Amino acid sequence: MSPLPAKWRPHTIGGMTYLVVVAVAIAGLVLVATYEWRTGICILGVGMLIGAVSRFCLGEYDSGMLRVRSKPFDVAAMTALGVVMIVLALVIPDQRV
Image (cartoon, rainbow, N blue to C red; front, top):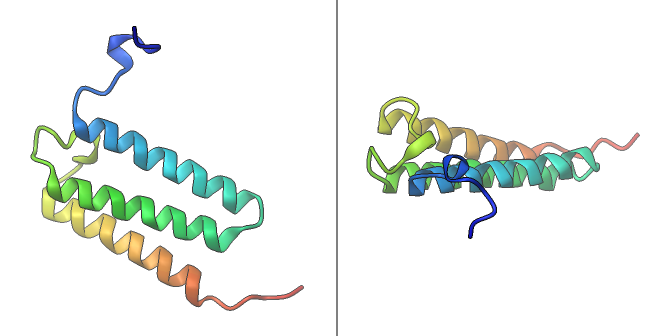
């Protein structure tokens, strides 16, 4: 017996992947809130890249909540956002106060 009612469980692999992306984003935000901002932002970027790869690999029906617009747009937007977040987190110099 599952701990969640059937209406709360994801019905597609994309829905499950979406929950993984959300969990990774929450983990990244927790790290950002605990002053590990570089690591947290990199984890957020990796979460976006996981979403982009999943959206690229899954079909239209299976992509679930990862499907927002067309597949090329979704993949390009998530890839660009993930890469930009990781690059910016790595190249911004430390500012000692």
